[in-house]
Length: 125
Image (cartoon, rainbow, N blue to C red; front, side, top):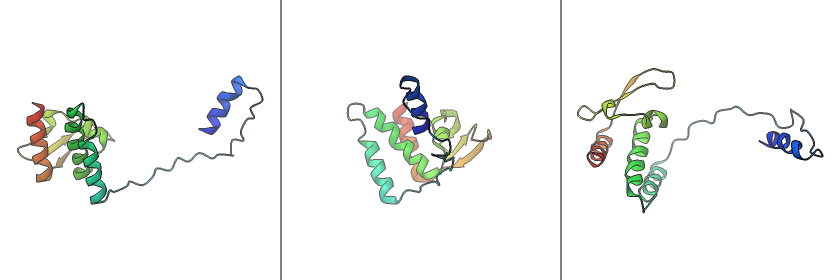
């Protein structure tokens, strides 16, 4: 970011020095996934419930979404692409389409998560 900013600044201020390409090596390392503790997840869910007092539908969407991500391990993009036809709420199975590697898969849902999803579906409809 610093390198790019200095290149941009050099356009407007010729006194700006060019940075040595190896001065700030690029770090492409992917950080390891962070698994939340039960307490952290509870605090996150509480924050979701109170995220927008003026727009309660937002909390009604975020809270089940975070719970679904936490209980299934799905990627956020997978969960956001779910459609009503992808959820078998009777059997407790989600059909995930177009995953990271363009595959489809079935994800079983825990009974507690299924209860919340059913309630969300009733409220949404």
